[in-house]
Image (cartoon, rainbow, N blue to C red; front, side, top):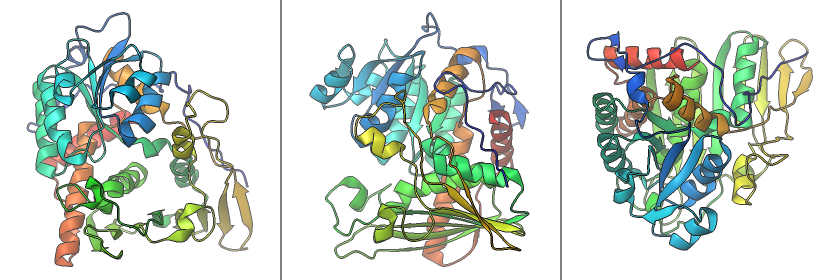
Length: 408
Protein backbone atom coordinates (compact mmCIF):
# COMPACT_ATOMS: atom_id res chain seq x y z
CA UNK A 1 0.00 0.00 0.00
CA UNK A 2 1.42 3.36 -1.03
CA UNK A 3 0.90 6.54 0.96
CA UNK A 4 2.05 9.72 -0.72
CA UNK A 5 3.60 12.25 1.64
CA UNK A 6 3.89 15.69 0.11
CA UNK A 7 6.79 17.85 1.21
CA UNK A 8 6.47 21.63 1.31
CA UNK A 9 8.06 23.28 -1.70
CA UNK A 10 10.19 24.97 -2.59
CA UNK A 11 12.37 24.26 0.46
CA UNK A 12 13.34 27.61 1.96
CA UNK A 13 12.29 29.58 -1.11
CA UNK A 14 8.56 30.14 -0.74
CA UNK A 15 5.14 28.64 -0.25
CA UNK A 16 2.40 27.65 -2.60
CA UNK A 17 0.16 30.44 -3.72
CA UNK A 18 -3.44 30.34 -2.59
CA UNK A 19 -6.49 32.51 -2.05
CA UNK A 20 -5.63 36.02 -0.92
CA UNK A 21 -6.59 36.94 2.63
CA UNK A 22 -6.32 40.62 3.39
CA UNK A 23 -7.77 40.64 6.89
CA UNK A 24 -11.01 39.97 8.67
CA UNK A 25 -13.17 42.37 10.60
CA UNK A 26 -14.71 40.11 13.22
CA UNK A 27 -16.87 42.89 14.66
CA UNK A 28 -18.81 43.20 11.41
CA UNK A 29 -18.16 39.78 9.94
CA UNK A 30 -16.66 41.05 6.70
CA UNK A 31 -13.36 41.03 4.86
CA UNK A 32 -11.24 44.19 4.84
CA UNK A 33 -8.94 45.18 2.02
CA UNK A 34 -5.63 46.01 3.69
CA UNK A 35 -3.22 44.22 1.39
CA UNK A 36 -1.30 47.38 0.53
CA UNK A 37 -1.15 48.38 4.18
CA UNK A 38 0.59 45.11 4.97
CA UNK A 39 3.66 46.36 3.16
CA UNK A 40 6.01 48.35 5.34
CA UNK A 41 6.91 51.56 3.56
CA UNK A 42 10.55 51.18 4.54
CA UNK A 43 11.01 47.79 2.85
CA UNK A 44 13.27 48.09 -0.16
CA UNK A 45 14.53 45.65 -2.78
CA UNK A 46 12.45 42.82 -1.36
CA UNK A 47 14.54 42.50 1.80
CA UNK A 48 12.78 42.57 5.16
CA UNK A 49 14.81 43.88 8.07
CA UNK A 50 14.22 41.76 11.17
CA UNK A 51 14.52 42.71 14.81
CA UNK A 52 14.84 39.55 16.92
CA UNK A 53 13.96 40.05 20.58
CA UNK A 54 15.41 37.40 22.86
CA UNK A 55 18.54 35.33 22.31
CA UNK A 56 17.95 32.53 24.78
CA UNK A 57 17.02 28.99 23.81
CA UNK A 58 14.12 29.81 21.47
CA UNK A 59 15.71 32.82 19.82
CA UNK A 60 19.13 31.31 19.25
CA UNK A 61 18.13 27.69 18.55
CA UNK A 62 15.06 28.13 16.35
CA UNK A 63 14.49 31.65 15.08
CA UNK A 64 18.07 32.70 14.33
CA UNK A 65 18.98 29.72 12.07
CA UNK A 66 15.67 29.96 10.19
CA UNK A 67 16.02 33.72 9.67
CA UNK A 68 19.60 33.23 8.45
CA UNK A 69 18.59 30.68 5.80
CA UNK A 70 15.34 32.11 4.35
CA UNK A 71 16.04 34.47 1.43
CA UNK A 72 14.60 37.96 1.75
CA UNK A 73 15.03 38.22 5.53
CA UNK A 74 17.95 39.98 7.22
CA UNK A 75 18.49 40.24 10.97
CA UNK A 76 19.56 43.84 11.50
CA UNK A 77 18.81 44.29 15.22
CA UNK A 78 18.79 41.89 18.17
CA UNK A 79 17.25 42.81 21.50
CA UNK A 80 19.29 40.91 24.06
CA UNK A 81 21.66 41.21 27.00
CA UNK A 82 23.82 38.44 25.50
CA UNK A 83 25.91 40.70 23.31
CA UNK A 84 28.82 38.30 22.76
CA UNK A 85 26.56 35.43 21.64
CA UNK A 86 24.64 37.71 19.30
CA UNK A 87 27.71 39.24 17.69
CA UNK A 88 29.26 35.81 17.17
CA UNK A 89 26.27 34.84 15.02
CA UNK A 90 25.24 38.24 13.62
CA UNK A 91 28.36 40.44 13.58
CA UNK A 92 26.67 43.16 11.53
CA UNK A 93 23.53 43.40 13.66
CA UNK A 94 22.97 46.13 16.23
CA UNK A 95 22.45 44.90 19.79
CA UNK A 96 20.12 46.85 22.05
CA UNK A 97 17.34 46.39 24.59
CA UNK A 98 14.09 44.57 23.91
CA UNK A 99 12.12 47.79 24.19
CA UNK A 100 14.41 49.65 21.77
CA UNK A 101 14.01 46.87 19.21
CA UNK A 102 10.23 47.33 19.06
CA UNK A 103 10.62 50.88 17.67
CA UNK A 104 14.03 50.67 15.97
CA UNK A 105 14.10 52.53 12.62
CA UNK A 106 16.10 49.76 10.95
CA UNK A 107 13.44 47.10 11.61
CA UNK A 108 10.41 46.10 9.51
CA UNK A 109 9.52 42.83 11.24
CA UNK A 110 9.84 42.19 14.99
CA UNK A 111 10.18 38.60 16.23
CA UNK A 112 9.32 38.14 19.92
CA UNK A 113 11.13 35.15 21.47
CA UNK A 114 11.13 36.11 25.13
CA UNK A 115 9.55 34.73 28.35
CA UNK A 116 5.80 34.20 28.02
CA UNK A 117 4.59 37.10 30.15
CA UNK A 118 6.50 39.64 28.03
CA UNK A 119 4.96 38.58 24.70
CA UNK A 120 1.97 40.92 24.88
CA UNK A 121 3.66 44.19 25.86
CA UNK A 122 6.52 43.76 23.38
CA UNK A 123 4.28 42.72 20.49
CA UNK A 124 1.79 45.50 21.21
CA UNK A 125 4.56 48.12 21.29
CA UNK A 126 5.98 46.87 17.98
CA UNK A 127 2.58 46.86 16.27
CA UNK A 128 1.86 50.39 17.46
CA UNK A 129 5.25 51.44 16.10
CA UNK A 130 4.22 50.20 12.65
CA UNK A 131 6.17 46.94 12.67
CA UNK A 132 4.96 43.56 11.48
CA UNK A 133 5.17 41.01 14.29
CA UNK A 134 5.87 37.30 14.83
CA UNK A 135 5.27 36.02 18.36
CA UNK A 136 6.67 32.73 19.63
CA UNK A 137 4.22 30.40 21.32
CA UNK A 138 2.33 30.79 23.54
CA UNK A 139 0.83 33.77 21.72
CA UNK A 140 0.03 35.51 25.02
CA UNK A 141 -0.71 34.40 28.59
CA UNK A 142 -4.44 35.19 28.53
CA UNK A 143 -7.22 35.07 25.97
CA UNK A 144 -7.96 38.73 26.67
CA UNK A 145 -4.39 39.66 25.68
CA UNK A 146 -4.65 37.60 22.50
CA UNK A 147 -7.84 39.39 21.51
CA UNK A 148 -6.26 42.75 22.21
CA UNK A 149 -3.18 41.98 20.09
CA UNK A 150 -5.38 41.08 17.12
CA UNK A 151 -7.30 44.32 17.60
CA UNK A 152 -4.07 46.36 17.70
CA UNK A 153 -2.76 44.64 14.56
CA UNK A 154 -5.98 45.45 12.67
CA UNK A 155 -5.97 49.01 13.93
CA UNK A 156 -2.41 49.53 12.68
CA UNK A 157 -2.76 47.44 9.49
CA UNK A 158 0.18 45.22 10.41
CA UNK A 159 0.79 41.53 9.93
CA UNK A 160 0.58 39.50 13.16
CA UNK A 161 1.60 35.85 13.18
CA UNK A 162 2.27 33.09 15.71
CA UNK A 163 5.38 30.90 15.42
CA UNK A 164 3.97 27.36 15.49
CA UNK A 165 6.99 25.60 14.04
CA UNK A 166 5.83 22.05 14.79
CA UNK A 167 3.43 22.13 11.84
CA UNK A 168 6.55 21.57 9.73
CA UNK A 169 7.96 18.72 11.83
CA UNK A 170 8.23 15.34 10.08
CA UNK A 171 5.92 13.79 12.66
CA UNK A 172 3.12 16.30 12.03
CA UNK A 173 3.61 16.25 8.25
CA UNK A 174 3.33 12.45 8.37
CA UNK A 175 0.19 12.62 10.49
CA UNK A 176 -1.41 15.10 8.11
CA UNK A 177 -0.58 12.89 5.14
CA UNK A 178 -2.25 9.91 6.81
CA UNK A 179 -5.35 11.95 7.64
CA UNK A 180 -5.64 13.12 4.05
CA UNK A 181 -4.92 9.72 2.51
CA UNK A 182 -8.22 8.18 3.62
CA UNK A 183 -6.56 4.80 4.16
CA UNK A 184 -7.58 4.69 7.83
CA UNK A 185 -11.29 5.16 7.06
CA UNK A 186 -13.12 7.60 9.29
CA UNK A 187 -10.68 8.74 11.96
CA UNK A 188 -12.15 8.43 15.45
CA UNK A 189 -9.11 8.87 17.72
CA UNK A 190 -5.92 10.91 17.52
CA UNK A 191 -3.35 10.80 20.30
CA UNK A 192 -0.17 12.83 20.57
CA UNK A 193 2.46 12.76 23.31
CA UNK A 194 5.18 15.25 24.15
CA UNK A 195 6.87 13.40 26.99
CA UNK A 196 10.28 13.99 28.53
CA UNK A 197 12.29 12.68 31.46
CA UNK A 198 13.37 15.60 33.63
CA UNK A 199 12.94 14.44 37.23
CA UNK A 200 14.91 17.33 38.73
CA UNK A 201 13.14 20.64 39.16
CA UNK A 202 15.24 23.46 37.75
CA UNK A 203 15.38 27.08 38.87
CA UNK A 204 14.00 28.82 35.80
CA UNK A 205 10.93 30.89 35.03
CA UNK A 206 9.10 28.01 33.32
CA UNK A 207 9.15 25.95 36.53
CA UNK A 208 8.58 28.75 39.03
CA UNK A 209 5.01 29.74 39.97
CA UNK A 210 3.76 32.62 37.89
CA UNK A 211 1.70 33.68 34.92
CA UNK A 212 2.48 31.61 31.83
CA UNK A 213 4.61 29.02 33.64
CA UNK A 214 4.26 25.25 33.81
CA UNK A 215 4.47 22.34 31.38
CA UNK A 216 1.08 22.81 29.72
CA UNK A 217 1.74 26.49 28.96
CA UNK A 218 5.03 25.38 27.40
CA UNK A 219 3.84 22.40 25.34
CA UNK A 220 0.06 22.79 25.24
CA UNK A 221 0.06 25.50 22.53
CA UNK A 222 1.96 23.12 20.22
CA UNK A 223 -0.43 20.21 20.79
CA UNK A 224 -3.56 22.34 20.55
CA UNK A 225 -2.37 23.98 17.33
CA UNK A 226 -1.64 20.55 15.85
CA UNK A 227 -5.19 19.42 16.59
CA UNK A 228 -6.69 22.56 15.05
CA UNK A 229 -4.39 22.21 12.03
CA UNK A 230 -5.36 18.57 11.47
CA UNK A 231 -9.02 18.44 12.45
CA UNK A 232 -10.44 21.93 12.90
CA UNK A 233 -12.30 23.43 15.83
CA UNK A 234 -13.50 21.03 18.58
CA UNK A 235 -16.81 21.29 20.39
CA UNK A 236 -15.46 21.08 23.94
CA UNK A 237 -12.45 20.29 26.14
CA UNK A 238 -11.82 18.38 29.35
CA UNK A 239 -8.48 18.30 31.14
CA UNK A 240 -6.53 17.06 34.13
CA UNK A 241 -3.23 18.39 35.49
CA UNK A 242 -0.83 17.30 38.22
CA UNK A 243 2.47 18.08 39.93
CA UNK A 244 4.29 14.73 40.16
CA UNK A 245 7.97 15.59 40.72
CA UNK A 246 9.46 16.06 44.16
CA UNK A 247 9.76 19.78 44.81
CA UNK A 248 7.65 20.73 41.78
CA UNK A 249 5.76 24.03 41.94
CA UNK A 250 4.07 24.06 38.54
CA UNK A 251 2.20 21.42 36.55
CA UNK A 252 4.51 18.76 35.10
CA UNK A 253 1.82 16.31 33.89
CA UNK A 254 -1.11 17.12 31.61
CA UNK A 255 -3.86 15.06 30.01
CA UNK A 256 -6.20 17.06 27.79
CA UNK A 257 -9.00 15.81 25.55
CA UNK A 258 -10.67 17.67 22.70
CA UNK A 259 -14.15 16.48 21.78
CA UNK A 260 -15.51 16.58 18.23
CA UNK A 261 -18.75 15.02 17.01
CA UNK A 262 -17.23 11.54 16.71
CA UNK A 263 -13.52 12.11 16.94
CA UNK A 264 -11.64 12.32 20.22
CA UNK A 265 -8.21 13.98 20.40
CA UNK A 266 -6.01 13.09 23.38
CA UNK A 267 -2.99 15.26 24.17
CA UNK A 268 -0.51 14.08 26.79
CA UNK A 269 2.59 15.73 28.27
CA UNK A 270 4.78 14.62 31.15
CA UNK A 271 8.24 15.23 32.61
CA UNK A 272 8.51 11.72 34.08
CA UNK A 273 8.43 9.47 31.01
CA UNK A 274 11.81 7.90 30.36
CA UNK A 275 10.98 6.24 27.07
CA UNK A 276 10.25 9.60 25.49
CA UNK A 277 14.02 10.10 25.06
CA UNK A 278 14.28 7.74 22.10
CA UNK A 279 12.25 5.59 19.73
CA UNK A 280 11.35 2.95 22.32
CA UNK A 281 8.18 2.75 24.38
CA UNK A 282 4.83 3.93 23.13
CA UNK A 283 4.08 5.99 20.03
CA UNK A 284 4.44 9.76 20.03
CA UNK A 285 1.55 10.08 17.56
CA UNK A 286 -1.25 7.64 16.75
CA UNK A 287 -4.33 7.67 14.55
CA UNK A 288 -7.15 5.13 14.78
CA UNK A 289 -9.86 4.81 12.14
CA UNK A 290 -12.66 2.55 11.07
CA UNK A 291 -10.35 0.57 8.77
CA UNK A 292 -6.83 0.84 10.14
CA UNK A 293 -4.47 2.45 12.63
CA UNK A 294 -1.18 4.30 12.24
CA UNK A 295 1.58 5.17 14.69
CA UNK A 296 4.81 7.18 14.70
CA UNK A 297 7.34 6.31 17.41
CA UNK A 298 10.43 8.44 16.81
CA UNK A 299 10.31 12.23 16.84
CA UNK A 300 11.41 14.94 14.44
CA UNK A 301 15.17 15.53 14.30
CA UNK A 302 15.29 19.28 13.63
CA UNK A 303 15.60 20.45 17.23
CA UNK A 304 18.64 18.28 18.09
CA UNK A 305 20.20 19.18 14.76
CA UNK A 306 19.73 22.90 15.42
CA UNK A 307 21.08 22.51 18.96
CA UNK A 308 24.17 20.86 17.49
CA UNK A 309 24.74 23.87 15.21
CA UNK A 310 23.40 22.40 11.97
CA UNK A 311 21.69 24.91 9.68
CA UNK A 312 18.44 24.19 7.80
CA UNK A 313 20.09 24.59 4.39
CA UNK A 314 22.69 21.87 5.02
CA UNK A 315 22.36 18.38 3.48
CA UNK A 316 20.58 15.90 5.73
CA UNK A 317 18.75 18.52 7.74
CA UNK A 318 15.29 17.33 8.80
CA UNK A 319 15.74 13.80 7.45
CA UNK A 320 13.78 11.49 9.76
CA UNK A 321 14.88 7.86 9.49
CA UNK A 322 12.03 6.57 11.66
CA UNK A 323 9.02 5.47 9.57
CA UNK A 324 5.40 5.48 10.59
CA UNK A 325 3.66 2.10 10.83
CA UNK A 326 0.27 1.35 9.27
CA UNK A 327 -1.72 -1.45 10.91
CA UNK A 328 -4.43 -2.97 8.72
CA UNK A 329 -7.56 -3.63 10.77
CA UNK A 330 -8.72 -6.75 8.86
CA UNK A 331 -5.41 -8.56 8.35
CA UNK A 332 -3.14 -7.11 11.04
CA UNK A 333 -0.54 -6.51 8.35
CA UNK A 334 2.05 -3.88 9.25
CA UNK A 335 3.39 -1.52 6.60
CA UNK A 336 6.23 0.91 7.21
CA UNK A 337 5.74 4.33 5.65
CA UNK A 338 8.76 6.66 5.33
CA UNK A 339 8.49 9.95 7.16
CA UNK A 340 8.61 13.18 5.15
CA UNK A 341 11.55 15.54 5.55
CA UNK A 342 10.93 18.16 8.22
CA UNK A 343 11.70 21.77 7.36
CA UNK A 344 10.45 24.80 9.30
CA UNK A 345 11.67 27.38 6.79
CA UNK A 346 8.34 27.56 4.89
CA UNK A 347 6.91 29.30 7.96
CA UNK A 348 9.25 32.28 7.61
CA UNK A 349 9.03 32.13 3.82
CA UNK A 350 5.27 32.49 4.29
CA UNK A 351 5.72 35.46 6.61
CA UNK A 352 8.01 37.07 4.04
CA UNK A 353 5.50 36.56 1.22
CA UNK A 354 2.63 37.83 3.36
CA UNK A 355 4.49 41.08 3.96
CA UNK A 356 5.89 41.59 0.45
CA UNK A 357 3.07 40.15 -1.66
CA UNK A 358 -0.04 40.31 0.50
CA UNK A 359 -0.41 36.54 0.71
CA UNK A 360 -2.15 34.98 3.72
CA UNK A 361 -0.09 34.75 6.88
CA UNK A 362 0.93 31.11 7.42
CA UNK A 363 -0.45 31.25 10.98
CA UNK A 364 -2.46 34.36 11.78
CA UNK A 365 -3.37 36.21 14.94
CA UNK A 366 -6.82 34.63 14.65
CA UNK A 367 -5.14 31.23 14.98
CA UNK A 368 -3.43 32.53 18.11
CA UNK A 369 -6.77 33.57 19.61
CA UNK A 370 -8.26 30.11 18.92
CA UNK A 371 -5.33 28.32 20.58
CA UNK A 372 -5.47 30.63 23.59
CA UNK A 373 -9.21 30.03 23.95
CA UNK A 374 -8.67 26.28 24.15
CA UNK A 375 -5.62 26.64 26.39
CA UNK A 376 -7.51 28.85 28.83
CA UNK A 377 -10.56 26.57 28.77
CA UNK A 378 -8.36 23.52 29.44
CA UNK A 379 -6.96 25.08 32.61
CA UNK A 380 -10.46 25.98 33.78
CA UNK A 381 -11.67 22.48 32.96
CA UNK A 382 -8.88 21.00 35.04
CA UNK A 383 -9.71 23.32 37.93
CA UNK A 384 -13.43 22.59 37.86
CA UNK A 385 -13.32 18.95 36.76
CA UNK A 386 -15.87 19.69 34.03
CA UNK A 387 -16.22 19.45 30.26
CA UNK A 388 -16.25 23.02 28.92
CA UNK A 389 -17.23 24.60 25.61
CA UNK A 390 -14.62 26.56 23.66
CA UNK A 391 -14.98 30.25 24.68
CA UNK A 392 -14.93 31.85 21.24
CA UNK A 393 -17.52 34.34 20.03
CA UNK A 394 -19.32 33.68 16.71
CA UNK A 395 -17.26 36.46 15.13
CA UNK A 396 -14.00 34.91 16.41
CA UNK A 397 -15.00 31.50 15.05
CA UNK A 398 -15.78 33.07 11.69
CA UNK A 399 -12.44 34.93 11.73
CA UNK A 400 -10.59 31.70 12.50
CA UNK A 401 -12.44 29.86 9.71
CA UNK A 402 -11.60 32.61 7.18
CA UNK A 403 -7.94 32.66 8.22
CA UNK A 404 -7.74 28.86 8.18
CA UNK A 405 -9.28 28.57 4.72
CA UNK A 406 -7.12 31.35 3.29
CA UNK A 407 -3.86 29.85 4.58
CA UNK A 408 -4.49 26.38 3.11
